[in-house]
Length: 624
Image (spheres, rainbow, N blue to C red):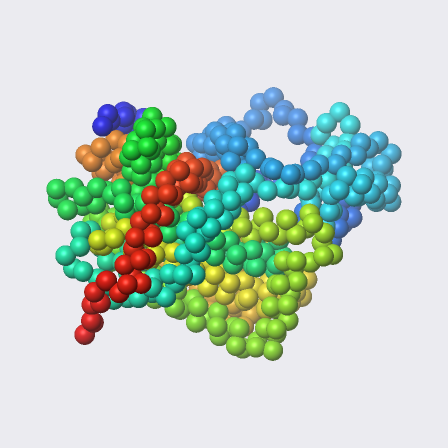
């Protein structure tokens, strides 16, 4: 395999290593966690017009934005941008371009009303203008209750625009792929559920099978990359945006995603390679390149594999690393003043986290799997137990909460546009949470000890069940029961975190309203979940890096990963962090495309395996 040059990557890593922590810390503006929406810079005092607009728009629209003319710069007063701001600006440009493609809005609609200066002269005249804008949007088929309104005075003339989002291309791609795999594999998530539990427990283990880790270790290693901040922080934000009904669509997306996980992890096993030293190499880059080559499309497969690997490396350094450190630090600072953004101790957290990650990832997959199999089940058990405590403590509110969730998913009053909006929020949250169809889990599951590739695919389908259907649903019930999705609940207790889209703090408040001491436990849980996510994503990124550049380059990737880990604690460059999440979701494009073309191979292997299983041909291993 031809190796790609490392000069650019190495130079960036060296520069980052040479930058003193104190310099970077002084340049940092904030350590607030990067939420699913990018944080805005420190705002100027609101104008009277903006105050009027927000008072009128509140409660009528899903969200609102005010766009004013940019302040004129006075000569000699321009402030030189910090390194962080320059990098963030460059990433912002890339983010807007890539985001425009990956999240191309299918079915979105915008209604624009031109205003005059007289419409802005008083609150009464602006109220009348907003009424005309609402009526115009309704005529254009927009449900204003699930749309965003923007008042802009930045152009040649003022306007009020009402925007209703459609379905992002990436989300639709994942959903359609999951539906296809569900049907193609004959609803394998239902047929093989009991068998998957038996296999994970080791009932059919053969110690002589090729591989590096057990079924259970592979499952927990893959789960450690998905169970975490998405379940704790993301669900709260999803419900605050889409309403309680988004929970139903998260569950449905998780169910469909089980078939996607089965397909990609089965193929990951089928095309894995065993090296002379015993290490296993596998994942989407292998089944895309080798699988398409078998079908006579080697060039296309190679392109898809390279595209996937590049996205995975980028996503592992930011979304699977820096973003996790940044978010977990924000959650930790909610309960421990030592890590408050004004205390200046962020770098200590970064140093500790970097040291812990280094101790694990330098030991390879076996050490990652051994760590994950201890952290993930323990933290999941603690978190689910806390959720159950809140639910049972408020058992009388559970029927009403369930009714609110179901009604919100199919609310006729919201109209078609509203139902689609809730569906999109639910599916998007599930996609970010369980990563079904992204292809990352196939890298971990390809190393499992098994004779039958299908068997590991059957184990893998448990991931969306645990991650989305169980843990995300538990979180959603807590959020709905405590009313944390509404700013009016508990005398405005949740209003600030809803406004700032601080999902981790919002979930912490929800638990704290029932279990006063639990926010401290949750803060530690967030850190451990972030840590487990990082060590798994380090393996994903490192395997893709090695596939691109060769085994000898592995140490360079690990150095970059550790540098990115430390920088995540002292930078507030939100575009950099969100860019990583975007790259992770972008992995679905080459992966799902390849899975569809190779699904026939997975289906054929499934039919053969299932026939043997039903015939009782697999020996059962008795556990002492």
